[in-house]
Image (cartoon, rainbow, N blue to C red; front, side):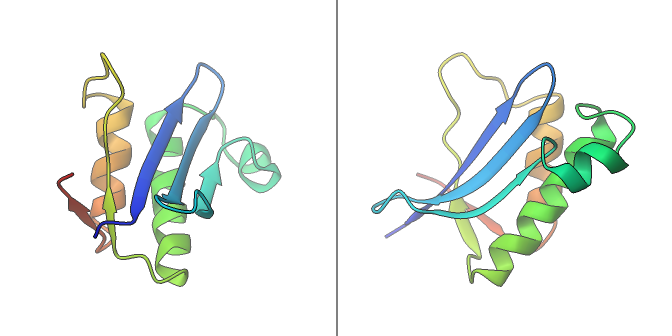
Length: 101
């Protein structure tokens, strides 16, 4: 069973990424540029540096919660390129496995 889902939301102002338990709906790990510590330390909240910071922080928090494999299901009309691809690549480079759904 593959119980954890990676959910990424990119808006014009913020980046949100979280790992959610598929069955219970409980959020296991979350990272966002809207958080006070990141919002005050990053020069831009949506550039490539912010994507890397959010992905590294989420991976660190997911590992702390003993999550080492996740599923990512793209939304309708969502392409795996640009900032989304950068977040996924950085997240996966931290020894977390992306499992096919």
